[in-house]
Amino acid sequence: MDTTLPDASGPSRADMDATALEATTITVPRPKALVKVEEPPKFDLDTYIANYAGRTRYDRLYLIGICSPLLSIDALKGAIDEAKINKDVSRYEKAVRALAEVAPSDPDASLDAAWVQETNRYVQTQTERLEHELRGYKNNLIKESIRMGHEDLGNHHYKTGDLAAASKAYSRMRDYCTTPNHITSMLFKMVNVATERGDWMSVQSNVHRLRNSQSKPDDAAKNISKITAASALSQMHQTLYLDAANSFLSIPPDLGDTYNEVITPNDVAVYGGLCALASMNRDDLQKNVLDNQTFRTFLELEPHIRRAIVFFCNFKFRQCLDILEAYRPDYLLDIHLQRHIPQLYKRIRTKSIEQYMIPFSRVTLDSMAKIFAPTVVGGEARPTDISSPFVQELIGLIQGGILNARIDLEKGLLVSNQIDLRAEVQRNTLESLREFNQEAHWRILHAAFIRAGLEVKPDEADASEQGHGGRFP
Image (tube, rainbow, N blue to C red):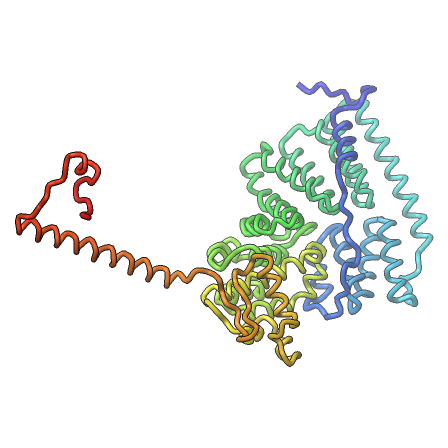
């Protein structure tokens, strides 16, 4: 029985939960320009941004605008338009300031003070109207109306950029949800807010609640793709790349454009492929990625990711790394990938070197440099010198315990310290043959003693210690 009195003088459970959420949630702000991408990306800006909906369009346009000098003007103009559509004054002002830095003479680079004043007045009026309606719903004690009032207020705050107020309004819907679908809708809204705030622990917590919600089987099946996608994104941002890869690989192909306010199928292919390359070995990549019929639907949207994985599985590491380097500018302009690209690429490169050494007991540094550092080979007289960046990289891998090998600079070799399994098998076989020959010799000698009548029977104590069929001294 629901004993919550919305109009009581004391705070309700939802109010207390919202207050606790405000006090304990650590908001991780999205980083500003982390890098400057001078190379032109391979995507067309208009086609790229058309795949997304909602507030993520602004986030992506703004990041491209401040990171890519080639696309900055077009991207920032698009960001200004998005901010105006959503009545988000703070985002509009931020985009205008960024545009003024790169194109001061552009007409859009000057702040529209009249629009700002009018929009602020509109936002305040709408906020007061929705709060007034919500108070009326609470006085009438109609749970469904109260729930919808909180939802409308939360949507208003979210659209206009007040994410903290939006999160509080959505959390207060909890006490007035009467069906599993209401709870599911509320949790998805909280996931979207937490995603934009960069609060990935909150995203994971709400995803766990979504998995445990008592929705009907049909409704749960429709939402599983979005739930898995949100969980995978959260795991990737927590640098749990193997868990993220497994989650991306298990997203059902019916995701489509149902969640393009957060992630698209193209993003699933890229994020899942890169996380898998960085965390799985060749056998797992072949089994879990290339042979995965579910994930193949996503890989078809980004064929270069599939080619990179195929090359890695076929020991063609140079081709794999070349593909990834060619698409590095695109990934550095992705709002979710930018901060992970250096670490992901480093892991993929390290795994490539490690996998390359597996079949060999020793390999020349020149041959390795041609695969893993071709620019070093062409740009330095002695790419295998101890001061070479490539040799220093190998030294770091050896000191870090990643490569069990040693470098012979005099002969220009990288020598593996691992046990030669083939030689170990040969040694074990020879030892077995030696023991068999010795055992056969003693048995033949014993038979000869018996035929000559020279057998000496042991005492009972000696027989019990020696046992039946024991060796003879």
